[in-house]
Image 1 (cartoon, rainbow, N blue to C red):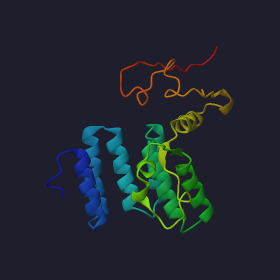
Image 2: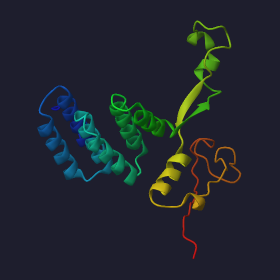
Image 3: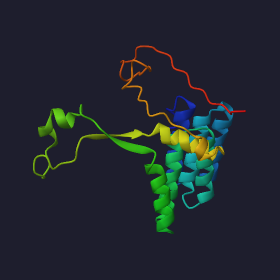
Image 4: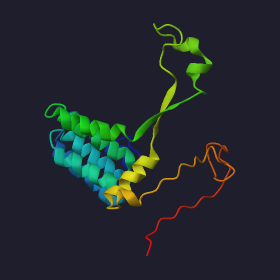
Amino acid sequence: MLQQAKNPKEKIYALGLLGRKGLSTDSIMREIYAIVDRTNDKKLKSSALWWDAMLHDDDTTRMIKLFQFAEQTQLAAFQIAADLLLADYYIHHSIDQSLSYAKAADSLFEKVFDSNSLHLKYPLLFLNQRAPGHGDAASKLHLNLVEANRRQLLDAGLAEKNIWVSDLCTSCRTDLLFSHRAEFGQTGRMMAAIGIRP
């Protein structure tokens, strides 16, 4: 697989898999970090930190290092990954800490009812042993970007009382805001500003 890898991302993935198969973890990680150093790409660095935490799954400092880097670079997917790694580690050591990390990861998602789901259009494809109308509602998981951004502001040192979140929905208010989803990709421009009052 390593020979077929065409780019740094694929090489890191292939090396990580070799590490999972029992090859020398330290030499694998040296090779992965050497690839990252040549690219200076924050997503590849996050990926390298993730593999480092995965291959050293009993070392929480590596997991915390991944979380801190992901938080600093605003890569929510890797923040969630770090929370889940820590939750998995602590499930064997401290159930309270494990639940805390799992809740931190889960809180960045929200279930959104999907009325256009295949479950509703073609219910016979998804029959279960429950009586009609008693199965799970069609839903999708969505990353709660408002909450993810609010946490990043708090982590950066902003006081919670100084954070204000608009309740306007871009999809609902296309008369006022541009929405890629609601307007099917027709181009538009929006601007956001952040500042400190004198």
